[in-house]
Structure formats: structure tokens, C-alpha cells
Image (cartoon, rainbow, N blue to C red):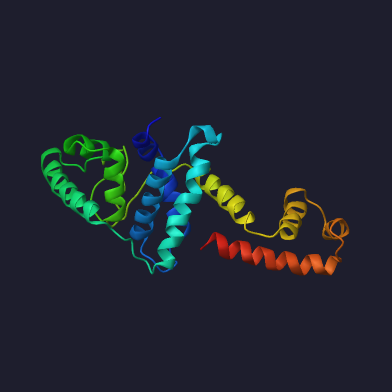
Length: 221
């Protein structure tokens, strides 16, 4: 599977990741654009020999770009070449919409401009060009106030949560990871957990509350 296909086939991951940060102070379209940039970067760097699924590799990269957006004050930095490409995309989009009465897809824009679909997706992710970011056409219902809408399956939302949790757990120190592993993955009581970690039940209870607060904060950015 080439990079272009990875991008167009996995836009739902961007939607799910961006949706996690909805209402956190940055416009949803900006969150989505940052997520698209992360998806493009993941597609560029993905290696099948890693032995992991693309979604497993891509989600942390997508989330990283969205969190970076918060650190940068909600601004997606755009290079000159991407700005120029986005202007071409905007012109082509307007012409296409007048002729076909629908928005073009990434692949259609790429074919018209004779550039990689991956590059088109990157230009779109950094600007607010009004066209479809997926291989789906605009015959489906639900244009919602200009907001980007991507069909997404329920299991993708769960996948995002699981991968985000796994990545966040890696940031904890070893003792805290052991507490979470014993309490929530092996279903051990606080007393059993305390015994295995040479702690008191009260210490485990207090630390557990702090760890959960840390995880919740990290996972929502």
C-alpha cells in the first residue's frame, strides 16, 4: 500500500483524534488540519517491517501534531510551497465544483495537478481549502455548517482510546505502571496490589487516584 492510499484510507483516524479535543479552546477545523498533517507524516515514515498496523503507528503521530497545536497557541505553520499549492487547489476546486456540482476528492485534485495525493493532503491539512478530504463524494447527507465530516466506525473511536492509553502509560514511571497493570488489567484488589508492591493499601489508593488524574489530563491534552 503506497503513501497516498494510506492517507486517503485512514482519514477516519484523524476525525476520531480531533474529536477527542473538541471544545478544548481550539476550533475543530484547526484540530482536524493538524491531525491531517500528522497522518501525512505517519504515512511518509511508516515501515511495514516495524511489524505493527498502520493505525497503531499513526495514531500517536496524529495526536502528537494536535497536542503540538495547543503548545503553539493554535496555529498551524504553513510553508511557502504549501501555500502556493493550496492556492492552486482552491482554484481547481472552484472550477471542479462549477462543472461537477460537488467537491473533488484528494485523488481527483492530485490527478488534475499531476502531484502526489499525499502532497495535496498535506496542503489541505495546513489550509482551509473547501474540498472533500476523503475518497467519499458529497452525495451523502450531512453538511454541517462547513465543518469537516468524515464517516467513522465505532471501533475506530475505541482504537484511538486504546492506543492513546497505551502511549500515555509509557510516560509513567515503572511503579505507577505496575499499579495500573495490577489494578485495571489484572483486576487485583488494592490490598493485593499493595502486598505485591510492598506498599500499604492506603498508599496504593492515594497513588491510584493521582495516576488516574494524570492519565486523564495527558489523554485529553
